[in-house]
Image (tube, rainbow, N blue to C red; front, top):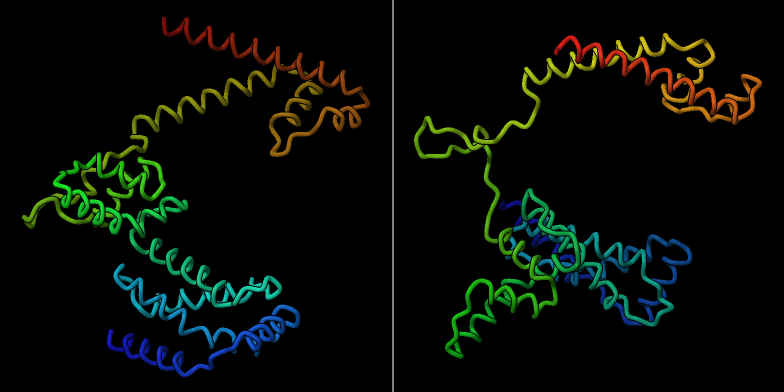
Length: 292
């Protein structure tokens, strides 16, 4: 932790000592990077505005992320801004870079807030970073007017204020109010308490189901082999090439190989399937008669 703090201070001091670019110099550097991929120009542009990135990163410390990581993400956003900046639009680079820096930091914070993805849409991101502030203001205003807001009323007001669906507000409330817990944590304070993972339902197939599935699969395979053996060589070839290959062949390619028309191959395929269906139905009737 001490090393991280020292590293943060070093980065901040370097950023504060960087040159301040006037509009004309900034424009020249942007053109040199865009048109000639001049890395020296890019380095000067990034270094000059690193103080802006660090300043914006410091505003997100309250979310619990290490400052060094926030600065790194802010730097990545700054580099993305430099790569995509179009100097012909007549906008200062710092104005353009603010959006990219903020977006990069926000994405990092949301990725690391919880093992469960907190949100990915614009409305969810807006809620994540504004919900608590808006909620506190609405509660203060209601208290000043002598009103008590229940949970549903408060969520509706937040939804209207931020301009997001009510369902998103309710979802974010649950995610922001909770925290991640290990499934290996015990359910009680006792040393021999059962772990939470032991309470999860096992949805996988049980031994009896696996045995039954294997038996049914083997039986079905046997029936299919018997149905295939009831076909002649040409019919068996067509079925195998059309249905049993990873990449089934077309009727036209089979017709070329067999010296038949596409329509004739289709007719032979249909006849083969009819024979196989009759064979499988006969096998099924035998099983039903045996079980009766």
